[in-house]
Length: 200
Image 1 (tube, one colour):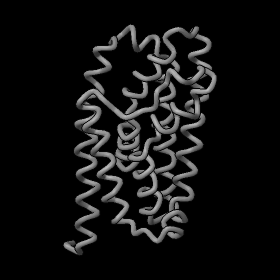
Image 2: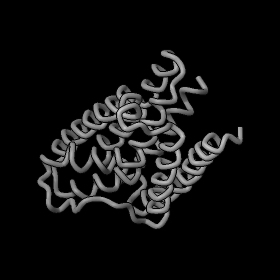
Image 3: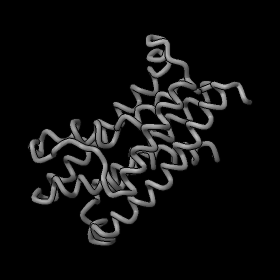
Image 4: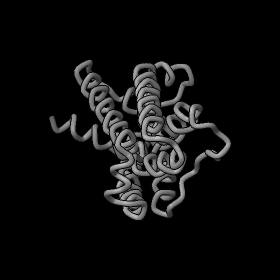
């Protein structure tokens, strides 16, 4: 149970849910409630499919490119740290959403790269390659699925969340998320460096 909860929380924060919610509210401010909820469902489904594909085929991606797990840990940790700094500073790299129609937002850019960005992809691939047993893989997949569904629920009920905590509240929570991500990225990089240098 502890492993499941830890994986759930890690994936939840890695996907920067409050930043995603903030972007979602921005691009749907003129949409009807029905349109927002329809888009939220499509985004959730897209994120889930992308994440599961990365988890299931992560090992093969490592094999094809000949990249070691520890090298990828260091790279993914560095990307995650950059995302964390962006959140703390109130900025996170994203595409210009004004160039898209609402119906085109679900997969690109809301699912990819805003929710599943380079840092998230890196963490998913590391998780996939680091599995030692089928039971652990099933637990991680389930925890990741639950985190995506929670983010989907946040988007689905975005109107209520915005009324409850407001845009200023979202900004504060995003910064807190950035601090947590910074610590997580440091842990991932330190693990990769330690194993790479065989420091045990």
